[in-house]
Length: 153
Image 1 (cartoon, one colour):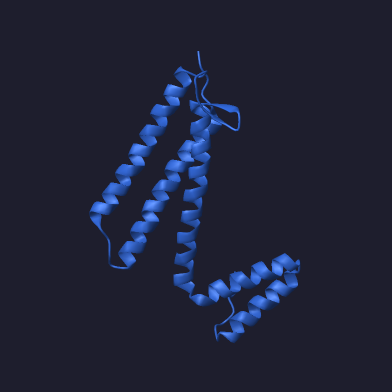
Image 2 (cartoon, helix red, strand yellow; image 1 turned 135 degrees about the vertical axis):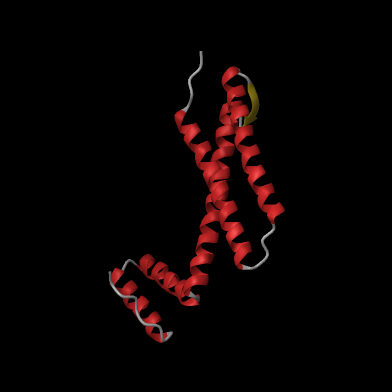
């Protein structure tokens, strides 16, 4: 009758996980800033559940009527499942970027501004193609800030 697209299911589950991670990171940020709002937290959880349920319902509807074209993009017919797939990938990109930004801000808060300088030095020197220059720049950045260089494990 119909086949389930495992890749699309994985993308949908990944999106739900990213939404949950975004809620947790936002809540932790609010707790640290002493601005935690329980109502906002519950609303975020409800949003995640509603999005997951809506994805499931739209996907099942798309499986039940696979040949129905809901729109055209540049002359290309797009079915319900295809449109859902495009939306999920775009949402993954958005939430992935949001989460990475929040994680980076936590790392920056934990280790201070020197971390961002070190990362910027790494990126600049990596573009130039020299790993030795990268480590030299990192060590110089650590010494100039008065911090001890990180110990090796």
